[in-house]
Length: 273
Ligand code: C2E
Ligand code: CA
Ligand code: CA
Ligand code: CA
Image 1 (cartoon, rainbow, N blue to C red):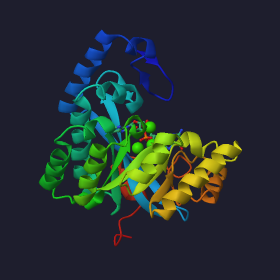
Image 2: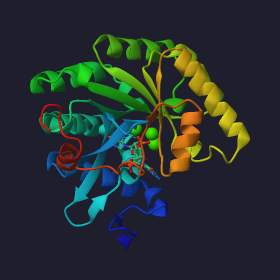
Image 3: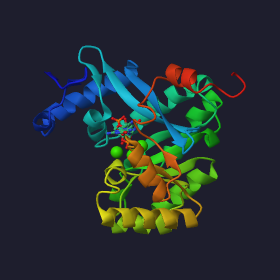
Image 4: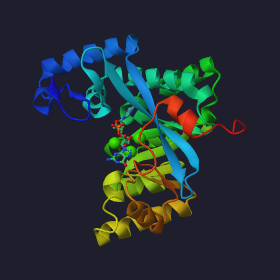
């Protein structure tokens, strides 16, 4: 393993990642990690322009017994190539349910890979986990990632509609400015779009991006959807995102992903302060 800075061990170098055998090895290790409960969940606050907490995004970490902490970009893509992503998603949801009592009383956003929605039993599996923990689906937002890879098919549209009917909120994650995404804005039933950090951070730099983001936000607002600007790192990022019409913000300027305990301490639960 190679030291990759900031205390993380770069476990899977890209050139190794391309290797099929290595991939199967990582898959096996990840499967074991889920069973051994080596996956940890951090929570990143999403706030409004006044800095009030509006929701929390659950972000998985892998605390490997010998290699230390591994970030999701290093293992989610591997998990996404198989059903393992669904097992991982369920493990994260179970952890969220366990943490829920100590978290502020806002919705928790969990990431769902597009591939999971293609499984016929996705909804039943997620609802069963929530029921077991006595958590209502209205406490959960499903952030659908990789959505640009999905055709806005009728099947997908129906699946998302059924999830909303069950009480979940739906966010389109990493929203970009491509044609297919613009089309999803019109056709998919969702509650929130999250503007990808690559866009948030190029506001004010590139006029065309400014115009596109403003257009997307204005369509979303017209449809009564909320817009989150991701990757807010500077005051300039917020003021430009606000100018484009975004009302919600997530990024290092406010908080990095925090442990459940740290979130509970920083954002006291209503009635407890
Ligand atoms: P994402 O869903 O777009 O999550 C936001 C990522 O941006 C997180 O990276 C977060 O730590 C990072 N971030 C937040 N604020 C800032 C900022 O101000 N500047 C910068 N440069 N980065 C910021 P993280 O935690 O490493 O997660 C990476 C990706 O892994 C996530 O991107 C998501 O696609 C995926 N992921 C994480 N947890 C899960 C999970 O439980 N299930 C699935 N399917 N995917 C997950
Ligand atoms: Ca996300
Ligand atoms: Ca995102
Ligand atoms: Ca992402």
